[in-house]
Each structure stands twice: as structure tokens, then as C-alpha cells.
Length: 244
Image (tube, rainbow, N blue to C red; front, side, top):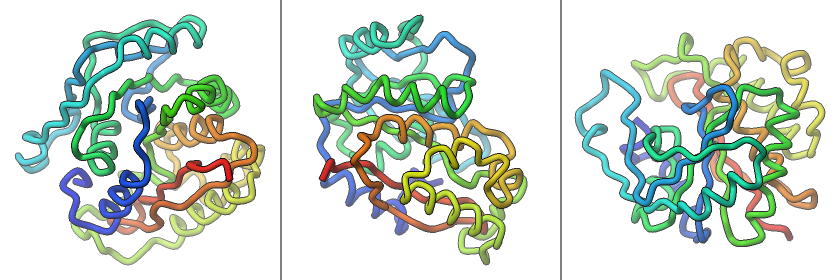
């Protein structure tokens, strides 16, 4: 439903997009997690995948005709050992929803990279391998959610009272990011409060590690948005957008 905009989260992403005009975007989404080899979209025009059901018709009518970048995809395949090119799969909603909110004109080339089933340390190294692309004005985007437990989400009330366990976990993660405590984040399963509730399965949390790996050591996280929807769904968004 975030794709429809009209709330503070959407406005924050739009404001961020106004400050950033990358040459291209490489996005890693929770909704394309699969075993290796890594796959990289290599089409000329980005098709969309409406990988959800039971939502209003207007969501299925949304278009986001961003160009692809086959040459960039080929370069990334050369940078990541064993990666292969994907020419059929389109952008899933974990990719096109935030991109549409931030850059609605769909004018920036987009390449999507599959999310491997891997440890936090391995995902961090994947981000580090992609980091040189940022020197060329290419944005590396990780799309997921710090607190994402659909069994606990109160879908009947977007402004429901917040669940304390979700607020505590979200705050713990934010504090570790701000302090640059990467090792603590790697071991969040054992050290973070309410980790099993906030992250019942890892795929929505995992893009965080790719984003952290793509950051330069001297960069500090900048908050784009902080808040919750539906009682416990964290919409926290941040960027490493300046080397200061």
C-alpha cells in the first residue's frame, strides 16, 4: 500500500529523491531472495512484477517504466564471481515501490540484483564488492524492513498503537547503525531485544547488511524516515549519502 503514497513516509522518500540524482540504481530487495548464483537483471526496459494479491486494483495499474542498463549488469556480473544475467524477471514490489516514491519520473536506469541466502557477514561483503560503483554516481539500494512480522501487523489500522517490542528492536538497530557497531548487528539474533519477534525470517532484514557493506568507512547514516505503520511495521529508512 506504500506505493499509493500520501503519507509522511512517502513524502520523506520523495524529498530524499530530490537530493539524489544517481547515474543508475542497483537495488537488492527482500522479494527476490534465492540460492546462488547471484542473478542480475539485464533488460533494456524494466518490466514490473505484481507479486502480491488481494489489494486494491489501483496497485496493479501502477507503471514504472524505468530503463534498464544491460552494460552495467554485465559489469556487475564480472565483479561478482559466478553471477549470471537475468533477462526475463521484472522488478518486484520491494524494488519498484520505493523507487517510484523517490524518483516518480522513472528516468534513472535500474538494475536489480538477487538477494542470496547468506550470512550477515557474507551479505556485508557483497555490499563491499559493489561499493566501487558508488564512485561512479551509482546508488546501491537495499529494500526490506527492520521490523517485519506479518503475523503481528495490524492491517486494519495503519495508525494502531505501537507494540513496545517492535519499538525496542527498531531503536536497538538504529543505535547500532549510528554507532557503526557492525559486529553487533551481525550477531543481532543473539544480542538484540525481541529479535525473534521482529525478524521471524531473515529476508526482509538481510538487505540492511548489503547497504552497510556498500557504505564507505567514514560515512555516517542519515535518517530519511523514522516511524511505524500498522502497529509494528517499521518504515525506518536511512542513507549513506555523503562522505562528509
